[in-house]
Amino acid sequence: MQNQKMKKTKFPSFLITFAISYLFWIFLTWSTEPQELTAGAVVCVAVALFSSRFFVHNDGTGFGSPLKIFVSLYYSMVIFIIELFKANWDMAKRCYGGCKKVNPGIVKVPVGLKSDYGLANLANSITLTPGTITMEITEEEGQIYFYVHWIDVTKPSGKEAGDEIKGVLEKWVGRVWP
Image (cartoon, rainbow, N blue to C red):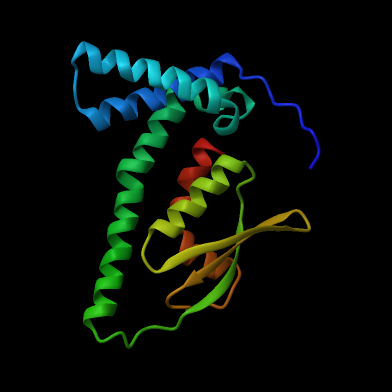
């Protein structure tokens, strides 16, 4: 293993990691007591100091615009929830219908996103919806592909399968992380 020099933590990365960690702390403790808030701040400063360089790349400034934050929240709380509900409804119909409409397989889906955050977010969104699991992300001749295990392969691969699997998810993720 090569001896690699650790990257320095930059302040915007630290600040974003601290803010997210602190909001998560408040959500978990659900307390506004001064000692809880102080303990949370101390723990989150330590977490941000040690981990911000691993979680937030490029200073994290690409996510900092209010419009991108709003679009990300709208995607997480509205668009993704609607797609999750539709996928759950589809799976419930399959399960209660005797599991006759099942044709599992792995499809190769082209993806138009380029950023690591966008690819990770889309892959996680696909995996979190029932009936699909993103197994691998590859790049072949400049094009990025997801290999997705799909419970009902209606289209073998390509754009048509991608449109059915990704739905509107890619478009909304691309608005925040293209």
